[in-house]
Image 1 (cartoon, rainbow, N blue to C red):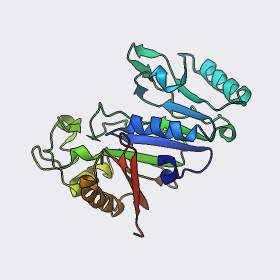
Image 2: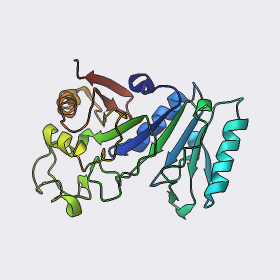
Image 3: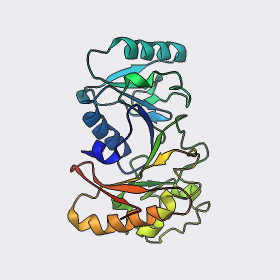
Image 4: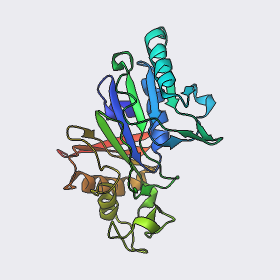
Length: 257
């Protein structure tokens, strides 16, 4: 159970950032946690419309006051069953839903929800990303931050095919095209002060997740990458999870291991 390994405290608000299967991880956690209680899933950026086959209810509106009122009504009145509720603003086009403001959840009654999850950036299906100015857009007053990275970026050459926004942001991160992405370099990019964890507030618990460790022969690299993430000098990280959302694998390593 992924939720057991993350072990979020009840009624927590969690921001998810990075690439390599972030949305898939959110849906996996929702499928597990909905057995314990209801879930609210938002985005502060934009998301593709969820698959209706995932038993989700979606509320979207250009009118933020109306949207907040609808969410409050659902939380207050729908207490006889557990649900997965996705809340966004209007469609930007048929394939994109617009995100809500970073303070949208400030007035939500968390006590009636098992967990609140927010997708705080996008990576255009890349496993590693360099965020531009204004990214990520972290939901205010979050308890946790989950930066996600895909193992398939390792041992690949640095470049736009592997790293999202590489062409425009490589200089800021002191990266050179063609260099091999080692576990040390991947950890450096993920935990860089200008990377996907920036703007993380003091007191937020950071739990990185290394995805796409699909087979046991990738475990050694995953452990090395996790070790470098734990040793990063910028952000306090006490444990790292690694595994495969696709194949239902999950393990963890801590700074005490």
